[in-house]
Image 1 (cartoon, helix red, strand yellow):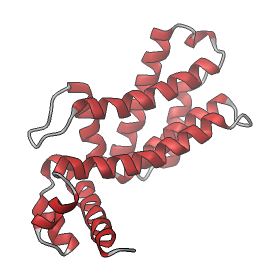
Image 2 (cartoon, helix red, strand yellow; image 1 turned 180 degrees about the horizontal axis):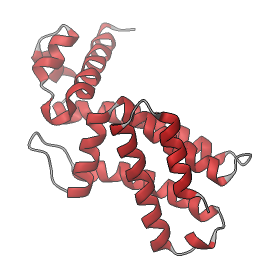
Image 3 (cartoon, one colour; image 1 turned 60 degrees about the vertical axis):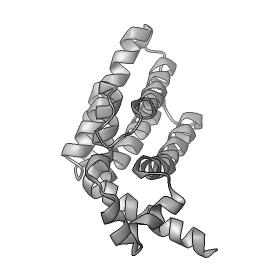
Image 4 (cartoon, helix red, strand yellow; image 1 turned 120 degrees about the vertical axis):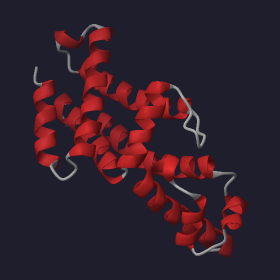
Length: 188
């Protein structure tokens, strides 16, 4: 691996930890550089700014969640309810590992405002909209009359995604209890 790739990987690992500990808004480039063992200016040789660094980490990690969700959606052996719970479990695992980041995703996506440190709320909205859309599609595929109406299905999807995120943030070690609670929300 070329030295430049090693440095970029070190920056990403350090930034990931700092973002997970502090969130995007409170994370400081100085702390990232210190954790990576480099000068602050070196970061800017690899990433344009803190937002660019944050997006790279967000996309890398969220890509793993997307792959899990798409695999669940494609698995025809699973009942719709198991696919749905699997999607919410993937979200909860991400949130439990990245709680400060998820909090900022939700805040930026729902408020539509940039954080003082920058960032594009449309990007954050895309993450939430994609996840909510996946949940909505599984509800539609369930064949239950309760979710025939798009507005009702959308409300249920939003409620499930919001609840899964809140449970994973507030009760990160109670995975089984959180999952069982979500199951009660979709019992039809």
